[in-house]
Structure formats: structure tokens, C-alpha cells
Length: 285
Ligand SMILES: N[C@@H](CCC[C@H](N)C(=O)O)C(=O)O
Image: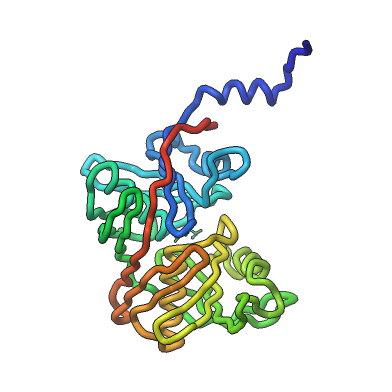
């Protein structure tokens, strides 16, 4: 028998012993790993790239690193699947809230993020499924037309809900715009030099006064079935610029969420599900 001595094999063998405990949860198919911050050893980006890979590891859209501070406060750092750090995730924050409710009985919890503190309250439970309402901060909506080479002028709005979004309104049933599939146009906008820090992109159709449908191209991870901040950004743009009701059902591919934004200067409330999928240990770096 031939002995395998390649350095790749030696590396694989060394990695075998470093196991990292994780929890996996999703919100309308937008999936996250939850890992205790102290286990990251400052290798957050590398861990995100490795563990979010769907073919060679557990797979997820991002990792929420959960820090427990000595004063009892919680702080989350969110890393996208490509290893970039984002200010926050609405769905990811809710997944952590569901995990803290399930594992520690916390029905209401304030979670610090780089995009501000988000307070999450459990509204209904059918363990492992949690319906959670989150205070998502005050959205800022700025109408903006961008010029994309080869595409032309794209009319939309920059929306900040703790992280950046560019929202376009479309009429087509398949969410295409400017003759491009939304996934293609989303990739072009998300990585355009016009947004030096990148942006999330939402394609929104107004269905009625109380309902919108949208598709999401996420910064740092591509098309996703849902986004909490994307739901808020799409709703805020529709409320501020299309005059729809201040309480909306926002339908993404992964399912509906509810948004309430009673006036421009108050926080938006987001209600949606989060489900704990599994917990385990995964080979780290
Ligand atoms: N899916 C998230 C947003 C995650 C962060 C985003 N990719 C970014 O880079 O800002 C959500 O539910 O909000």
C-alpha cells in the first residue's frame, strides 16, 4: 500500500483535533452558525470562510459570534460567508435571540451589534420554532440614482438600517430590471465602486397598500432567501417613497415577515420566525 504524505493530508489530520461547538439556526432559510466569541481566537474571517462553505463544512450565510460581557450584556459580531464583517444581521440577531430563549429561557434580550442595540422579544413558541419581534432602529431612506457602466441610470434608494442597502422598485414578476436577472444586477450593484464598503441590494414589487414582495442580493454572500435588515430596508423605502401603509407584510422567497414603522423618527419593529436546526462540533482551522 502507498503511504500518502502530501502536506495537504498532514494539514487535514492536524485540523481534525480542533473542534468548535456551534449552533445552527435559520430565519426563513437565511441560515447562521452561532459560536461563542471566545472560541474565535481572532480568526473570525477565516472561520466564516471555512465553516460557511456548503460543500466542505456545515454551511451557512454567516456566523454570529456571541460575546458575553462581564456586566451581563451580550454583543454580536457578524461575519458573512466571504469573511467580510457586517454591522449586523436582522435575521441572525433573531436566530441568536431564539437560541438564548431556548437554552437560557431569556424571553426578551438586548443584543449589542456594530449597527446598534437590537432588543428581541419572543412572541410565540413552538420549540424549536420561535416567533420574535425585534426593535430594528430608525431607518434612513435617501432616494438615489446611480450610473452603472453598461447598464445606465438605476433609480433607487440608499437605505440604512444599521447596515447599508440599495433598494430598487421593479414591475416585472421575475424581479428582473434593466434587462438583467435580479441576481446579476444585484451582484453588479453590490460590488460597484460607487459603494466602497459594498451594499446589500433589494428588488421590491409593491403588491398592494399592505404588501410587498422582494428579492435579496446580500453583500458578502449573494442571493439569500430572506434578510431581516433587507425586509426593513425594503419596507422603509416602500413606506417613505411609495406611500404604502406603515404596517406591511414583506414576502421574500423564504417567507413573509411583518414590519411596523409608525412614523419617520421612531424605530421600525420587525416580526418573523427563527428556528434552531441543530448543534454540534465542527472541525475548525
Ligand atoms: N441576512 C442579514 C444581513 C446580513 C449582513 C449583510 N450581508 C451585510 O453585509 O450587511 C439580515 O437578515 O439582515
